Image: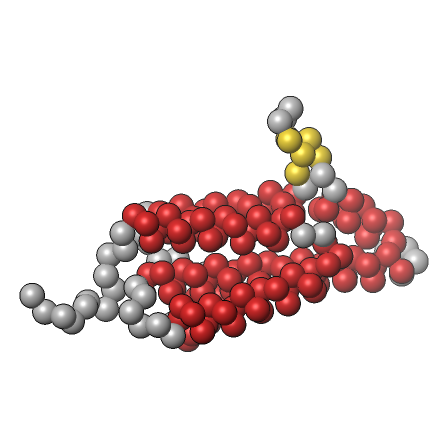
Length: 160
């Protein structure tokens, strides 16, 4: 038996479960953060990214699957937080322009206000979208698949 590992080993169930947990946990962090403080969240994700780079990505002994998906989870949620931050800034700008302030208020209320989902819980459309993305990515990780996300996957392959 050779000591040379194949380039892409099959991940075990522990790797898959931890990656799925990372996707859901990072998505949950984005949903629980107040929309006005997304800049702070971007700083947190930058810190997580630096720690990920030092502790995981540079360690070639860690499986490629784990390094790929952890990097993708951080970059994906960083991108979602940046989009939400920019959307909030744009809507805030719309609120200051006469004529657009009504539309900006309606859009802000629609996107960021919690509404009842059945009789169980309240969630905003922003939270639903972010958590759905997290769960879909977690399902791909549990199945042992590599995902292709526009713009994000290129960065992941460059890093890993």
